[in-house]
Length: 288
Ligand SMILES: Cc1cc2nc3c(=O)[nH]c(=O)nc-3n(C[C@H](O)[C@H](O)[C@H](O)COP(=O)(O)OP(=O)(O)OC[C@H]3O[C@@H](n4cnc5c(N)ncnc54)[C@H](O)[C@@H]3O)c2cc1C
Image (cartoon, rainbow, N blue to C red; front, side, top):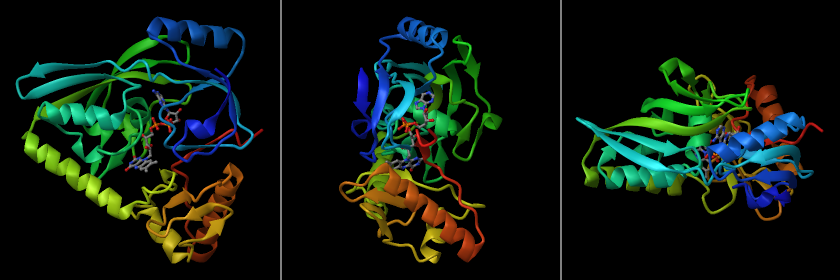
């Protein structure tokens, strides 16, 4: 697809056109696409569910590849649980629901993170003390040379909202080692997570989740709050009243409003509190 408005593909509901949006049907198709893009010198990157990105109003020139169709799910039983092998395009929330239905635990605290499995692995998504890398044992990855490599993952491959996966690489599948767990307890844990999120997060407005990373274990909302920016607004981009590490789109926000608000927050927190905040969200297409 050509010139696709990114507001349709991002949870922030913002962004100009992507020049090219590609949906490979399978690995063979993906390899052929990447080879064509490399031969023609076209830069490309991978789009998941668009829940951690803000795309410029001018759009993005890179070709975007979305592996949403590559979403196979398979369980192999082990003596104390199962190995779940899941495609990178599979929605994380649905994957966790499928695990819970079968009585396999280890991911339930990540329930309701709205990304894809591949995006979650790249970002090392986490919530309520659990990270996606805690149970991850391996990935299939498409590397920069356009080769598919199977890799066993180790603890050192991941950090706080960080992983070894590079911008130019694609997580095609993940393997998770899950343990038997009581189905009712898993459901209760997922219900708890949902209730807490609904109470704490501004789920009623479009957003990209937490804008800034925690600083030395202190959640970024605390600094934004201390800097007096709760409810601060530029155009329709607003620091949420409910959770000050969320910027919400109150209606017709532009990407430039979001970017200006991010800059304002960083400047104020630095000058008032001496703390340099770092974005957790990614800004796409802002440099030219
Ligand atoms: C309401 C809300 C709540 C949120 N809560 C949380 C939370 O509790 N914890 C948390 O960690 N995050 C949270 N997030 C942020 C976001 O959901 C996660 O970062 C998620 O992992 C991003 O996945 P995605 O598929 O949407 O990735 P995208 O936003 O599409 O992309 C993010 C990055 O991952 C890369 N990527 C995407 N797919 C792949 C792939 N298959 N292979 C390689 N790279 C890929 C992209 O190139 C980009 O660099 C929240 C977001 C929202 C909107």
